[in-house]
Length: 108
Image 1 (cartoon, rainbow, N blue to C red):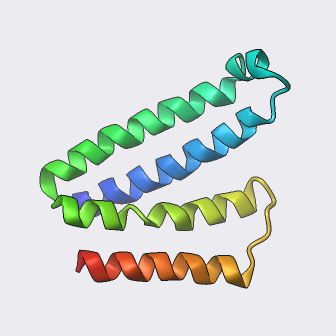
Image 2: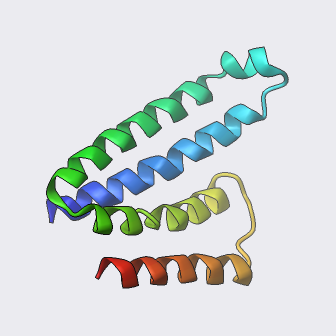
C-alpha cells in the first residue's frame, strides 16, 4: 500500500514539476527565466520525485516501477487542462490510454 502511494506521489510530482517548467519557459529571455521562481519550484519537485523513485525502487521491481510511472501522462493531461487551460482531445485521451494499457501489460 505504501508502495502505491510512493508511485502515485512520484508521478504527480513529476507532472507538477513540468507545469512549473512550462510557466518558467514563458519568461522573456534566458536571464529572466533563470530568475523565475517557477524554474526552481519545478526543479525541487523533480528532485523530490527522483528521491521517491529511488525509495520505490527499494521495495518494488524496476520492471514494475518504470512502466507504472507512465501514470505521469494522466496527471500531465489533467494538470495541463486545469492549470494551463489546454484542451483534451479524443486523440490525446486515446494516446494516454494506449500508453497506460501497455504499462499495465508490462507491469502485471
